[in-house]
Length: 267
Image (cartoon, helix red, strand yellow):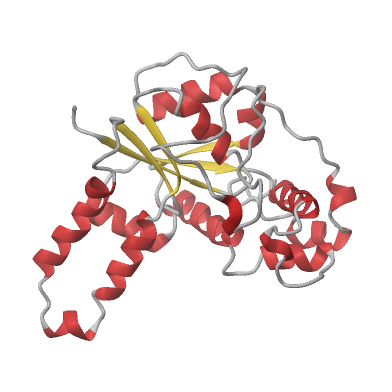
């Protein structure tokens, strides 16, 4: 196999990550991953560096060897020559780690979607699935569930911070893809992604999809609630939702100005 190329994908949840990965994985040379644990491995390794054991014997060279080997070893048995690793790569510590130890000029694709659409998608999903994680803290109204989803340690806010950090401090590192554009013009967006990653063109099927599966397995959504990553298999279809009927006015006013990737006058 030729030298494996590693690219990166991050962005908001409910923003087309699964359907995009499913499309890209039609190319036999590409493995667009589910949420990977690479950034968590890096976090734990970073914590080890601050341990008393390491401070007692600070072998930086050996430590660096372990970090540099994480991604190659993790994907060693994957057959594809191009890996697109999905994770919170825009977060300051993750990006610092990535640039320092792995690649000083990474290419990161950012998937975005109007924050209110993200919330409406989560609430609609949770309303249909009793075991969905927004329902796991007892009976709550929509406003409280939205506040839970938007807490400072939650996935949405963390990704918003990561996106803002990439845009403000790392120009030239990323490409933005809006969910609505992906759904409306998937062929155009895929061509742009291939150009950004510098991948040879491939003819994709945009009319029929299979459920996400990579490296011999799919998502086990029992951890978060059923059907979180189930996609529509008959072409690109956006579910029509009336945000004003799903989200209370208070939530629309509270979180309707958080599209950090837009110019400030529009966000």
